[in-house]
Amino acid sequence: MVATPALSSRLGAEFLGTFWLVLGGCGTAVLAATFPDVGVGLVGVSIAFGLSVLTMAYAVGHVSGGHFNPAVTIGLATARRFPWKDAPAYIATQVIGAASAAGILWVVASQQTGFDRAAVRAAGFAANGYGDHSPGKYTLVAALVIEIVLTAFFLYVILGATDGRAPVGFAPIAIGLALTLIHLISIPVTNTSVNPARSTAAAFYTDSWALQQLWLFWLAPIVGAVLAGATYALITGERNVVPVEGKVRK
Image (cartoon, rainbow, N blue to C red; front, side):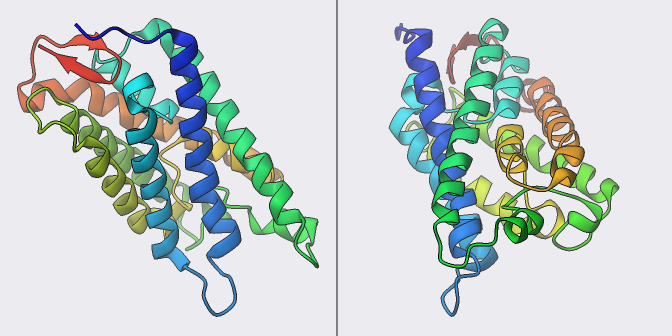
């Protein structure tokens, strides 16, 4: 049996992974998406989020399971792939890692000549929103539905790619590509969350509307993750799962 790393090591890995996810994904959105003449746009931001989770899943996924997302932690615990007793520590660490990356990003962005703090906060700083704060002006209902459904499918991909019956070594690729696809679908609707830690981090550096709407970007991803975690084994026939961090042992 593979020995489980100490909780401190797993939390360190989760901090690094979530930090990199926010720095890579939100950093691309804030610094590079609309850069004059060569901005990477929606596609570039989507790829950046996918690459960030793919690279850190390979780098530290073998240590912590590579969650980097409170919804993923809750979904895996629901599916009996992860012990509930460790979930609070994972979630707290993910939020701290995400907030730390957002802080670094704010420091970098604020050093640009002509930086307008009020304008940047009003523009959103990569925050998630609905209604007037949705990039495409989509309603609360649209935001709720898309975040639940896409988070559920993100968990299905994670659970399937790490299933004991799946090819070994390819899970980070599938997970990274899934996150890229999710962003391509939903950036116009909510600026894409599927990750409460990422949403919380961006909301700290945005006008008050982001904190007022933050409840949706905790509720919807968690609902989607629980739905997937509760139904994966039933749908796919997976049985006799033992909770080992991020892996299935049969």
